[in-house]
Length: 374
Image 1: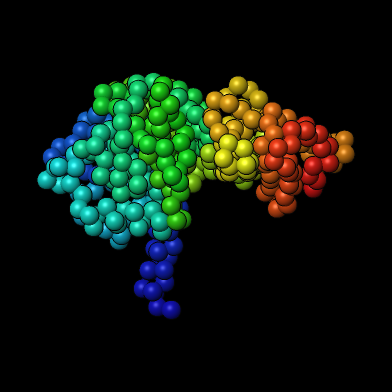
Image 2 (image 1 turned 90 degrees about the vertical axis):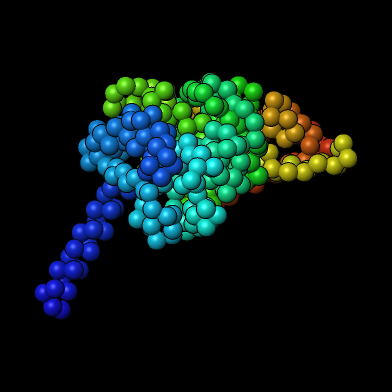
């Protein structure tokens, strides 16, 4: 190997190591959209930029152990360009601007995420939602200034991450909402229960959709580089999750998956419930899961079948390892609907299944040999 070849090889290794240590964050240059102010080099997002670049937040000795490098992009969006980034941010960008994204650019974003990229996308109204629409989630109504974590949002690392749990935060000015997603997970809702934060997995990548850029702008973030407020924590947790720095445990919660721990934070158990009945003309589906960590009950959760306001079953898993080397399962259901409960131990890759036939009043479950500890 020649000296020049060896040098090129060393430089390539160094570049790879540097990119592994740095979260490469892309954002659209304000100039491309005629001086847009709600992008990461815009005048309404100075606090967000400062917080992300502060090494006490993202850095070798920071809360997240990788620093952030932000690149403001004015060039045409292509797959090659996006390949230089780990995460890409879309702010408040006018779809009618001279520099608005072409169909080919929107397709490039979509393909990049499918191939493993990650995006944080904000969409405040129907004139500023081209990227959200390309991901199948256009603006569909109005949100509220107060936004509440909901369902899977309690425990999802995009909200409940290294900068602390986000339970309620604020939006400002033009505030939108989304329709219920067909294949995404609603993490936060308006006071009227409309979706305002949605996480989606697409191929090998992920996208986080926010219905208001001001959840992350100077109008809601604090005026220093710390992240003490709920909106500050939302910014930090979102970037950490999109960069793969805060995936919590083995189980990833979604609308129909209840994640429960064996040890604190390990996400060892994924619980799903399917229901089916001939009553009322016949109904079947996956039960909606509601974790109870928000009220301090982090060892169990609720499942609902037909109406999210009407819980059908309470389920919990307790650690009996020191007593009989098993986890214990308890469940109580107020229903005679047929159902199948599946508990998947993701650590040992084993599953326990419980069933109740349709039209049979569900008996309580008390299984002290539900799943082995090891």
